[in-house]
Picture (cartoon, rainbow, N blue to C red):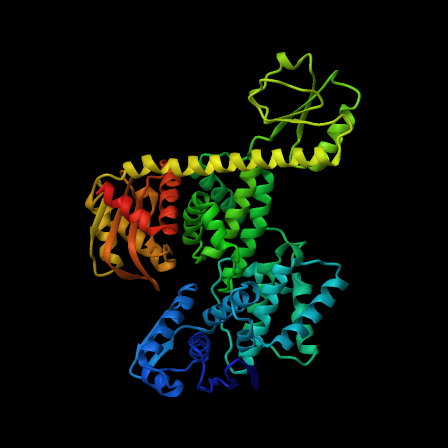
Length: 569
């Protein structure tokens, strides 16, 4: 099979699993060509690449640095031997890297769209999309575009790679496998994949069919499994997660039935995705981490435990999606804005005006009507805005004066004032959020260390010994639980930060210690120079929120974090 890909500088041919090297590629294009060669199974030395592309070894070294950065997003590591650099591991992790790249090329305006055909056969994508859309329309289903895109990209990658002899393999062990392998329950999934075969596009082997079934179900559980029941055991796990996040941010979510319902579906889909060793790419992740850093940190901590208990590796992309569910619950939990409408007698045109106000301010559910005569007796402590058809003097609450017939200009003034109030409240929350970091920083005195270690185990051992333990056996048992957690899923969180933690039931005294390294060490597949060991007792979850807020702020701005830690030291 041959793909012809047109570039500004050259034409590249992909034949079998070998990508032919061409001269005159610029550095950015060359990096992606080399990456694809590695994904296709080649072993490549610096000297070989230097000779093929007629550039210096230092230029190739820069390309490899860029490639490592791309691979680190999916915890993949370049391996070296006498024949050069190569990618170890199975086909599924490689396809995960490809999917992330394709999603970035499609959604990121800063990416060079001309490189997309190198990774995705767009004609094949269009053909399969048409087949899937026809079947979904016949079934009267409207799957969201983001879900459909992930399903289509995954399917095209499996076909492209399969035609090159690169097939996915799935291990048989599955915690929830019995339910998921009963595919007769999901005829639509079967129909979607069989339609590709009946159209003579590709014949799936059994592991590929099974893998894509996981992908489809993992992207649209509620669309493809409407008759299936979620096991009660799983419901308990979700409730425990909700409770853990609620305790971490001091919010009671027990009465929010929508949160539980939404998370049941989402987390069940998440498990399906992770059982297939795949994950949905979250294009909003940078914004989620920045705007909801405290909540993201607490959710990450809780999901890390959820993954550890269920032998699942949960990516930052997935943490971001779950964070949005909890943020939506927090928005529902917020005090509704109260608007007071004042008119001469409290009657007459009031019904007409309040009806208009509710249309233009849909998230305001409380609009109270009061006459000008009773305004002096009114409790204004919970009022956010006063709208009046008469002049009102000397009130500390924002006031918008409108005409009795509420004109278009009146509506614009009301909307403008309402937006100002909303933004002011949001900014206040941000300031309070940042201000809350000060006591957290101060509480770290005596728990911040600067130095160097040779590896992650030595870092964990160093920090673990800074806490008090009732017995040496409990200290060792806790350290073993930390290391075991790292084996299941790395606690690397980004920008050189790792946040290891172990079983809370083994902690005798809550303690959080931070080690800032002179030189980075390898942590999983990432380089780390800040290690924060969380040793938090089971009943001390209130400690999690402020420290995760601090650490997420540090990931956002490492220079600020290091300077704060130097002040503490």
